[in-house]
Length: 290
Ligand SMILES: [Zn+2]
Image 1 (tube, rainbow, N blue to C red):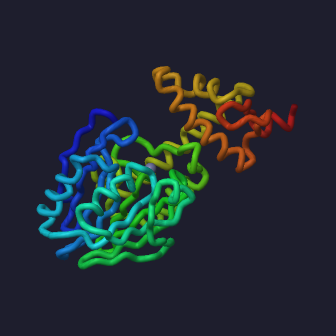
Image 2: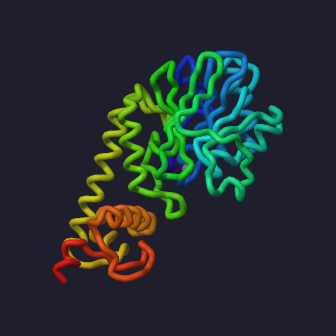
Image 3: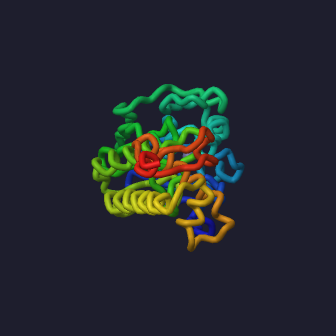
């Protein structure tokens, strides 16, 4: 994701203005996209970036570009620090705004004080109705938002404008994630506004790509285990032959997420009690033969 640059703010539809969080990095790409949504004097802000000083000015300019003069309330796609980390900064400037998100297990630790938002709930402002869709997998508290007036979707970290979504060992779950992608595809979003990277013009095509990519990776991992019992590091060496070794650690986390999913589906087995990243794995069919 490194190297891709985006303007600090942009108008992506008559209801949507994006303002970049000014936090570019390995995991954030060009930075977190925060969104002003609606058509009235005050807009909904989706996500707040990470609390970077330079974001304050970008948000001011984005409000100006949007032709409005304030923020009605804040909603968060999930509690990761590059999404909720800018709450204090935004509230310092605009006062104690209402903040809504799906309740998550890490909210207290992250000092996120929010009103709970549940699957199916709507958040409304002039010109925009955002419908929350619970879509865990990248994070347990992850929500996407359908913008009903457009049939478009704010995808949070579940679909990105560049690169692929990380399934973290803490809070991530690939089985849930694949279900969430299917749920998002069933919504047939006209376009997708991702939390990182450029606008996605064809939502269903991107979602089908994402699903196909994971399924192809899973087939490779199963084939790699077909060669013989292996730990994650060995599977990575068998599968990621075209990827430089410096990226193998990151690939290992992805493989571990796949193996944990396949284990829950009964298709692979752990040969010992270690965590997914360190255990020896085998195909369930091999295990039964042994
Ligand atoms: Zn995230």
